[in-house]
Image 1 (cartoon, rainbow, N blue to C red):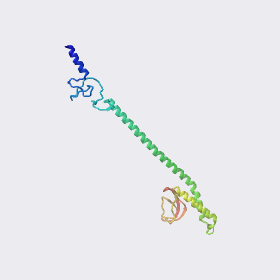
Image 2: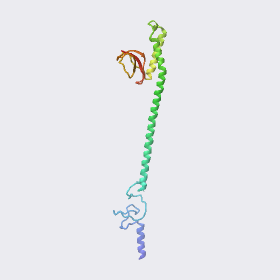
Image 3: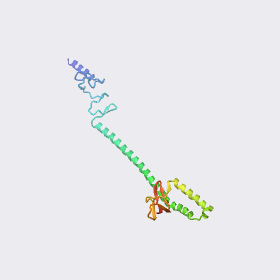
Image 4: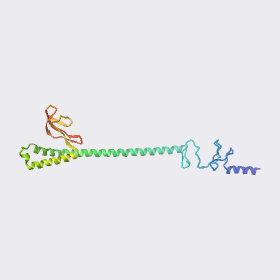
Length: 206
């Protein structure tokens, strides 16, 4: 009699039969299908559904509780580090481009302060000539150089400020004489670089 009971117990263990009398539905007898949540008591990983509260399962392995929270925290940490690194890189590109542009503007402005007086002197050299002298070949040569000079400046965004006959503008002009609103005479040319005044024009108003 004892041998028969032992045999039945051995068969129950081999079949992984739970206490309710039902076999497991996973194929290995690990979890019973009666719906009452019975378990055969064997600690086997059959690759079936995870019955933990957190349900963090990856590659047929269950990561619940503290392990699942740690994985989620690590993922958030890596993502935040990536986003911060990306933002830093984009800010670096913008700052580098801005510094490069500022350096270019500063360099060309300094260069213009050195070269524009030469251009002004060329214009003055023929501005007070008599009608007879103005027709001489060397004057025509100087006029041609002045024309080339002007074209070269304009191709770089440098333009002369219009003055004579224009309404006086304190943003672009400096009045040396007079109290009126119209510019009567230009004493010294003014220039702007890409719309920004770098040398104000010196004028006489009436």
